[in-house]
Image (tube, rainbow over all chains, first blue to last red):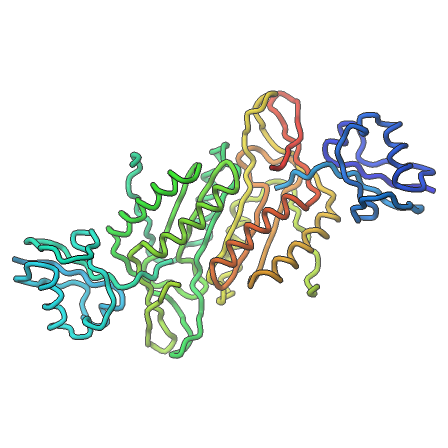
Length: 77
Length: 77
Length: 147
Length: 147
């Protein structure tokens, strides 16, 4: 199973990329754990998570080809 | 003694002119009386009076070359 | 009172979009500005008993209007941290669809610019000796009333 | 939900005064409009610890931003009697002094246009996934924080 992760704003300073693929993460919590292992700076960062453009506030299952976005606080306008 | 009277807005529909001279009116009340005699429609009209660009709310004396303005409700913007 | 002098706010005829664009452009050198608020009054083709309004013909007691606008400007600058304020009002005949009022406030932050713009619009409608004569298609007219 | 479709609000590069003028001009045919309210966001040359901001580089999660803007638009149209609303936000590098946000609301009467404009600005700053990276003269950067 593959999940696409989009990274935005100041989080790209930590990841160095704006998009990556994660394999074998079955839900949000596993995804966060995998991300924090790969990019320890993310653990200290504030961000919301959207799955397929829906912001989620609790753990949910991910499916193949889910697109997950990491959204730090907005600063448009 | 001469007083210049400036007429604005809908009041010009009554007077037909936007400026006139009145002689021998020594204060505001005499001026109003003279205007109402000349243009009876003014007696039924709502307007403020400014003397030398100061809006006045009570009777005051007029001097030679005073400029009096008749100001119906504003409708700019 | 500051040393700001009463400015002529009147323009003969409608206020053109290109005039507005030029006014906006001029502010690009003022790099402390973070927000501009603009209000534009546009002449409506209102349906009235006598017919449809085709234009408004604006007249003013110009000298008194400029004095009163100066007081409004001073009050607004005292109340809000503005970088600048510009106000233009048309005189003469302004056709329906054309712009007759342009109020433009700028500040470091949006809230001051927006609040100042709104308050300026409200005050100038109430305090400037300006009159609008609504021209009805078919040669009659009636006088505008501000709400 | 009405039949209004999500619109692309993003423009690459700064929003030019002439674009704003064209947008205003297009409304001259809409003769029920009495008031336009416009908010413009301009990039400030803020002094920061690291130096002076020379530009802001905007990025967005565009698809989600357009969805969220659609919701805001529907809410604002449901709440205020607007004739129209236009919103544009810049992407890419916008130099200090240039315009990065253009919100434009029109209504028969001024109050609705002004209130709707202000509420739209507040909501889009809070709800659109857009990020501003402040470029500091001298090659460093920091991320903008909305207040």
